Picture 1 (tube, rainbow, N blue to C red):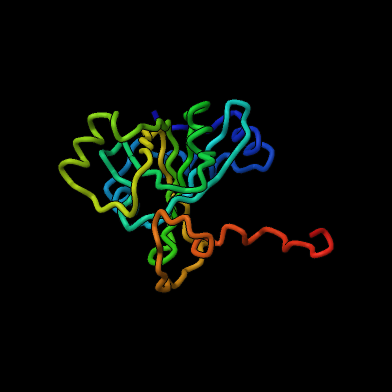
Picture 2: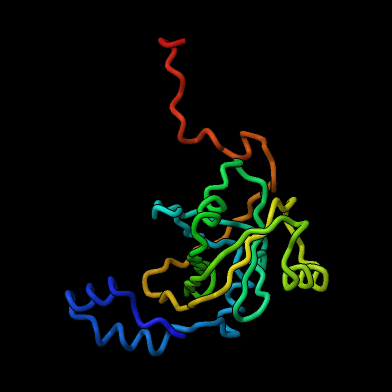
Length: 202
């Protein structure tokens, strides 16, 4: 069932007079599954932005990175991505435990400058208890993984739609040595936003 707008969307569209424009978008661009072109864009990406919220609506948006194709397209209604070792907080996974609604934003900064929104329901799984579709895909395709996988997130697609390229910058990719799964503080730059110690307080 293709979404034709939430009550909040409809209210703002009425207020700003965009009902006709929005109606065209819903009819032409909103899909309840992934097309081949959408799947192809996902398979080319090395990053995705993942939006989640807890049971009270507190939001988090976190990027995920990997080699091209690290987000797996299991079929036109199902995606999966690995959770690699990170800071151990698990903000996204914690939110998914409380509230399965998730939004993914893929942006092709280096080629088409087109983006893709995918919204759906997410669940996380340990590697010892993967759903059959994901286990079969991993066994049959043997995708290259960048680091030890702590768990997997599987998303059932509810809607997918374009983010137009009009305002997306075209970027140039530079070489960077990435040490996947490292705890080295220099490689992680995890103190970047920390204030320098005040000698007077030492």
